[in-house]
Image (tube, rainbow, N blue to C red):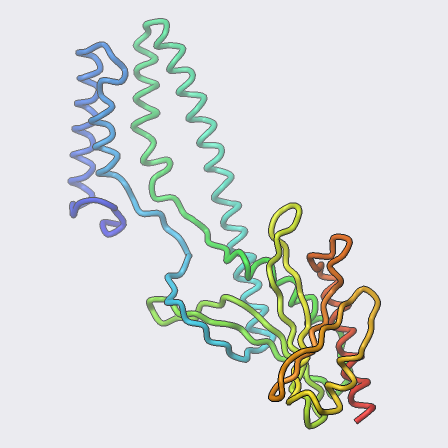
Length: 295
């Protein structure tokens, strides 16, 4: 527990004794000077002695960006971990809000009693201040990676779309690394490939960006067809594809061709729901089936 204190290298016993002495001094100063705020400096010093570092599951990453192919089970494990982190955050927030309301109520009661020149007000006021370290210091902060949490359900929805035999869908996770060398997942992509693909086709990569929506940040999934150059049959077929509600943008260079297929952003289409992601996956499966048939 000692290494969680923010200031000074003292044992917990010494801290508690020193804080108790400071609290007693604060009460003595309040009584002697007949002022509620007279003991405030001593109380603040006691708080510094009792200050704890918050406990959190947020990893300290190193800024690495390593993409690796993973299994569907790994994606499911991460989704489960995010769900548990969000559950923990809700469990922490509720009691914190309740404690805050209770503290405000007691401080108001102390203020009313103090205005009536009652020592009860001083007792309540000190009780509130003395209990703040125990109520609020060293609280648990449940970390939920914001962007990954927004994107993950969209990828899971796309992964659940039935695929014909002969199609492979591979998840790729971008990992960072914490101080202990453990993997820290930060982003996700999907690669869709027919097992018997034309020689110029690399595959279809599903990516997600975070857009600023009317009510905050929202995920936006799109597909990128990757080909070897722009002269092969796959690029020729896919760059001319049309689908209602989607925009198709051909690009790339002599080494790698790209065909971006994304939801039309007109009329508020700046984000994609789980259903939108399922439709996008289905659309690209059909598009690759046509490429296979024409090869």
